[in-house]
Length: 236
Image 1 (cartoon, one colour):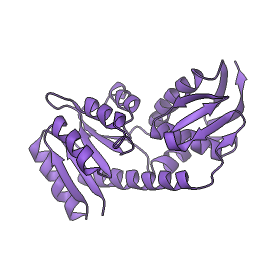
Image 2 (cartoon, rainbow, N blue to C red):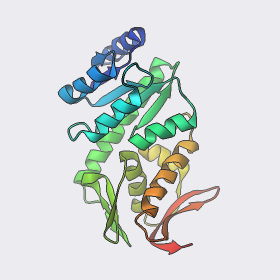
Image 3 (cartoon, rainbow, N blue to C red):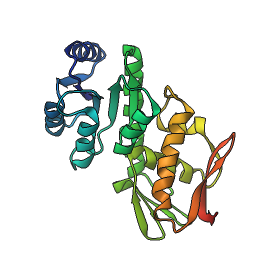
Image 4 (cartoon, rainbow, N blue to C red):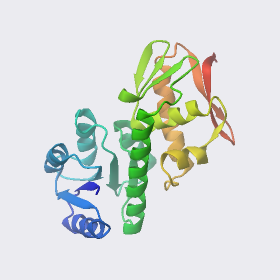
């Protein structure tokens, strides 16, 4: 039975989520502030953290940062609940390593869909870490234990989603991968902002690779189509 931590300073929303998720068979623990939320996260090690952004004292972005920096909690999926639905707000969370966003007000059934998708993605990631996937192609080696990519001996640390994206590209052996396929393979459904979500993560992934690639480009955008990994890279 999966355990979910809900951190939201709105007691009504907190209780609404708790009741509905418990009715769906989840174990739910909750906190009304970020300090207690992070403490419970370390203590209980939940399968997912549902985290409000706008809270007093410590906001959700800061709590998410603490979760990602702590060795015992860094791999726990984080679903942000926020009234801040602008792309810049989402990018800020993605930079920290947030896995998904749900904008308030939201439907409980939509929240359940997001939770199921995150649990499936976590399960697939754990399976990939233990399988004999193709981990090296051309100049690129994936390091699943640390969610990193090695290019000619230089290493870039990725978020779990960035790692999943480059892993899908590697598994497709240099063939084009559509944005729709990336959404389906990684999230298992189409997020609210659909392909813009992929564009944001691809942009961040490229920026990290660019820092270690010595001027070579390894991810090609095929306009109107999708993305392709260039195993040996090209100089532009």
